[in-house]
View (cartoon, rainbow, N blue to C red):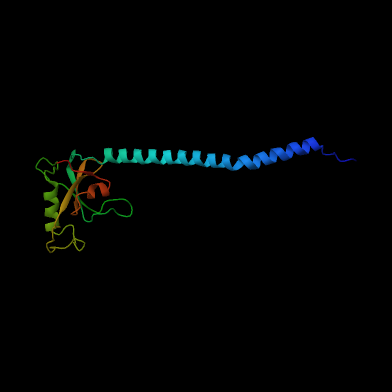
Length: 167
């Protein structure tokens, strides 16, 4: 069996095609890289814009819509599971429904009584009095209830993912 012969014209055409490919390929790849870079950069800018807008909308000052309960936080950080450390409270009324008129005052009272101290023993006949933190910040939980955080940082509500209390 005879092997096919390579015609000189075909050989020249293949060589010309390969040389053309070798010359133009770096420019094509550079153009693709530029297009990808621009596309991903635009997508990144869009994502940052959406996140900033969502953060501004979600973390705007809000008013308390659920005055039945308040969360008195013991620390200015979230738990490992994403929860908020502390204790919830309400003020009982003769009608049986609880209402909180001043969340900071209620939490200050709980701190004074030592309820939010780590050494507090709910089964003990008496506990030593506690110490009220120097500064307490009022925030609004996602469910509309108040949360009081022991912190001097005015932006602690946003850091915890809560809305600051609308004055």
